[in-house]
Length: 421
Image (spheres, rainbow, N blue to C red):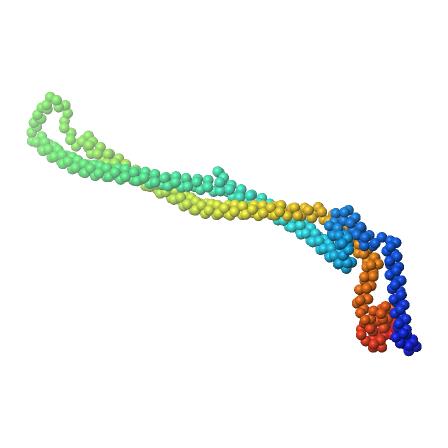
């Protein structure tokens, strides 16, 4: 390192002045060559401008047209390149936004269509459930309303049967009571009549016997002739001496016997009728209780079914509204989603073409001597006071030390591998 250090006098007219002179001469040659080159060939700025104008017209791109306008207005290269960089960023952002929009549309349509299918299934299920409930409630044969009506009619008929049978039983019992009263009265009369007649005929029988005894005694004392009977009398008075004398009593006893038998039959008929009535009423009461329990159960079930039907209809209405809202949502997003779905590939292609054209424009611009000179001037300006030192070799330790504002040995102490150390 530093092999030539100290071998050359570092005076104002020494090696440093010689180097600066040579660098100035080199720059003049470069400028002359650049001027000659520009005179012999088309302007790169113009070439870039024409290229962008052609691509703008071919692609219908306002972006490329805008950049071409900047070049045509002779804007500084830095402004143009900065604008191109912005345009490239906008194209990338637009591409990302399009991709996100397309993905969003695909997802929204899929989810919404799935929801619509689910709502359609729910609607079909609800409609089936509603129809089943309507049938369970309204069917003329098996529906709850028809069953309740039949039970109510049967219960009414049951009640009327109870009323009718009770009324008939009361009438029958009243007739029975009257009949028994008459029979008891007749029985008493007959019994008293028999008793009276028996006493009467018994008394007569005793008198006849006494008269017979007297007559017998008299006949023993002296026979005398009986008086002659009337002309109309053809028989002797018999009284109770023969069976014919008891006919009245026998007849009354016969009637009494029949009356007693009739009374017994009336009692038996009443007992039988009462038992039949009680059996019938028990059956009617049992049927009534069963009908009332069945009616209560069916009415409760009807209320539950009607409430369920009302809720199902509300659910159906809400589900149909939800389905309609989902379908409307698809209609609302359709224009934008159809556009991005149909034009995404074309938009990507157009963006790729615009990007390529802008990148080509950057290449053309950066390829102009003016841009090179401008970048060189800007770079030399950034070197500041170290511009002349760094002109030969910016990688040299002298340039690095100058830029770092340290001595060459000091810089090399920390960067031993730097050329010139």
